[in-house]
Length: 251
Ligand code: PGA
Image 1 (cartoon, rainbow, N blue to C red):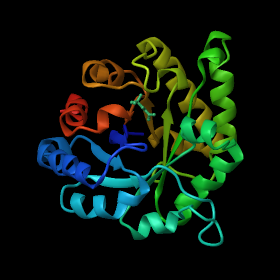
Image 2: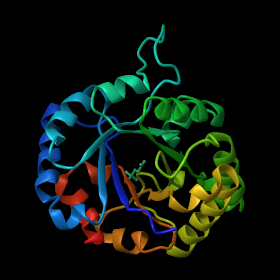
Image 3: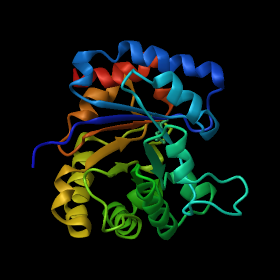
Image 4: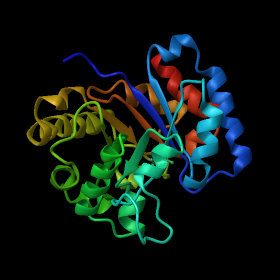
């Protein structure tokens, strides 16, 4: 199977007021025809800004997405948003199972699985996150943990067209620490192989993103690792200059 088109995705987390939408305008100006031919760009702002972000991004080629959704399409779930609402607001991707959701909201693999199905039910793409904690890595359990998360979180019906997997070691998120290129290569090769057992031959075309302290200074090395098809970027996605410097490694 030919290599998938890379995806560089920004996760704004709980950052950004309406004024921050100007960063998306800046990203759009820098996302020129040359870059568009090389990679896809996505920004996932806080849910309340999805609609406005989609308006700002229209015509730039930058996709907009959500950081979470509820598994159900509607109903009595105060404060939650449905995948269908993300689609209606102009979103096209939903991040599910981010380690901050797993930790702060107790999301199990089963919950993540249901949310991924919801994203696809709404016609969107699911970015399913996995990754080990520092203690799990020190105990030599990284592949066990990631394997279990993949088995539990990924619906077998997903395809290369609607599934993206992000490997995000919890200890690398927001810390400035990153695994070595060799460690990333090992985990990504493992994910590709395990994905084959879950979804079959479609696994070859699924984008496998690396996330955790990706910045302009380390992006070229991390994006150059075999089986790394892009990045999930937190802090460095808040500023157009940093985010576009990371995207620029694909130029
Ligand atoms: P970071 O976050 O780039 O700020 O480390 C990555 C993520 O949590 O997706």
